[in-house]
Each structure stands twice: as C-alpha cells, then as structure tokens.
Amino acid sequence: MIDRVRAEVELVRSHYPTLEFREEDFWARVPDYPLPEGWGRPSTELAFQVPRDIFGQQPYGFWVRPPLVAPGGGPPTNTSGPVATGFGEGFQQFSWAPESWRPGAEPRNGSNLLDFVRSFAQRLREVG
Image 1 (spheres, one colour):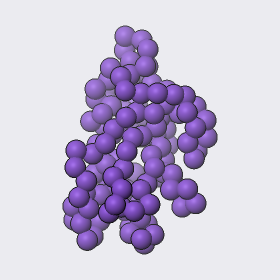
Image 2 (cartoon, one colour):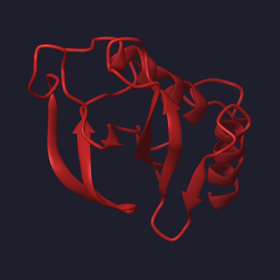
Image 3 (tube, helix red, strand yellow):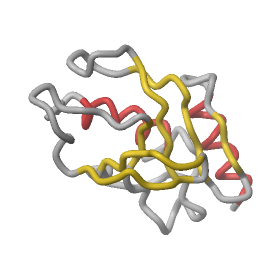
Image 4 (cartoon, one colour):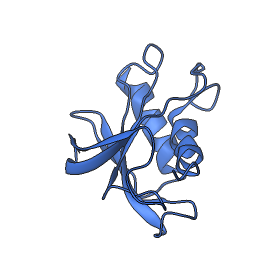
C-alpha cells in the first residue's frame, strides 16, 4: 500500500513541487498553496493528511497557517483552531471532503490526491 501512497504523493508533487510528505505520520504540506482572491495574501502554508489506505479511507479536511480571517472579520465558516498538525502548532482546520472518492487501479484513473488537493481552492473560494 505504501507504494500507492508514494505514487499519489508524486502525482501531487508534479503540480505542487514544494510539497513535503512525512512518511512517518502521513502528513503532507504545501508551504505556498495559492489562495483565491479575497484573502489578502497570495498564498498560505497548507497541510493535509494522506490516507494510509487510499482505497478504504476517504481524505478529509485541510489545515492552514497562519489562520485565515474572513473579509468581514472572524474565522471562515466550518473552521476550527488553532490546532496542531504533523508540522507543528497554530493551524486552522477547514472541514472539507471530496464529493466522491473512487480511486482506480492507477493514481490517474479515478479519484486521487491531486484532485483532492486541487479541490481546496474550491473550498477557499467560499471566502466567508
């Protein structure tokens, strides 16, 4: 199973070259994930957990540091924190799940981590 996880991580890295992956605890982060307009900065540090079993466990949530503030002030909806991740303290957790999770025999066939990581932009476009 670890070979599949490594293949998924490399697929994500092909679009986010600064991706770091901690195989010891399955935490990953993109230190410069691009933010959609409205957040007052171009990028953020973003972490997520990689499922240990891509086929049996749907990925869930992502974490940003420093916490984001909605344009009207206060935290965005469906967030919590600050919380700790494999990359330390001070992260804000965003609730988020893929609409469906059906991985194929190969990472590019069916659902994959790259699709999941790209979908964070959709959640972040909600801004409030």
